[in-house]
Length: 394
Ligand SMILES: Cc1cc2nc3c(=O)[nH]c(=O)nc-3n(C[C@H](O)[C@H](O)[C@H](O)COP(=O)(O)OP(=O)(O)OC[C@H]3O[C@@H](n4cnc5c(N)ncnc54)[C@H](O)[C@@H]3O)c2cc1C
Image (cartoon, rainbow, N blue to C red; front, side, top):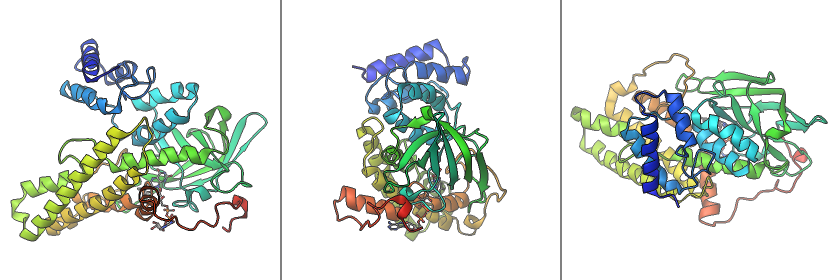
């Protein structure tokens, strides 16, 4: 059985074989993947060693101490946090071998084509249609919206309706969509920050071979739930050490600018500091308890606290800075490669955090999930559960 000592020894062997100082980033990352040290809990041959997920930190610490390059996880967050665990759970061997390596190496960026103008919280109501032709190729037509990173993506995870005669949760199928298909059109959507980090995506007769279907026809909702539960854990958690997460910029400003401090602000800062640390440690424990890629509804609670705290913390930072906090660094319309909370100014953090209670499931919807699936409270009335999707009022 692989343990922490064994993983440290393997990591040192990798570092001796490919010293980071003299090895290109791409070569180092490829060697790391092939040595099973990319995500140690994945199976052998797919970047892992079938080890406990909690042992990843032993590898990461050795690599960080040696100055080894990483795969820029913030740039490829949707691939790492959502596409990969879903492909691992539902993909064929061929799909796993084709997609997981370039995904982890960052050679292929992924985006998530789930939300539609008429289907956000009620995602299962989606209308994008996929029809299977005699040639074994699906033709997909519809519109998706709020698609983060679609302008950078080579592949997308996509859900579409394949049987309108079934109730809404049952007639959906999950696909891996090639974003270079001529039927895919990506248009920027500018946000409150001034930037366009997400997009609307128009799909017109997009062709997807049946080999790029993930899971069974009509079982896409079940597959999508794996993605959504992983999304909540990946949005809600920070993976660094003490004071490394959402509280870091506010704590730094507090330490570096004593002239801004007041007693009342101090009380609020300490309360938020404690809450943020509790959320960080809870996230760490949750991640360690996860079986391979299968978080439960507790991830919804984590994401819920993250959204609330990040908004309160960024609000306090702006307040602490007074007039200075009202300055905004740059309104230029940009197409950022990643969401960078710590490398940007307080105005950006304040505005960008507004989306935290919407993306990856709104806070109201997550409260429903926690109420029903964690606390066991009675469920909301669902009158459309057994009605064919085509007969639902729209
Ligand atoms: C920054 C950002 C990035 C995003 N990235 C992506 C992406 O990459 N891919 C993707 O597919 N989507 C993405 N989204 C979309 C996101 O998942 C949806 O916006 C979200 O699910 C809410 O859907 P909606 O916008 O249609 O709002 P609606 O579902 O219309 O909700 C409107 C309001 O009604 C409330 N509400 C709805 N239903 C209930 C209920 N049952 N009980 C109580 N209240 C309810 C909601 O909480 C909300 O306040 C992103 C969104 C944001 C903000």
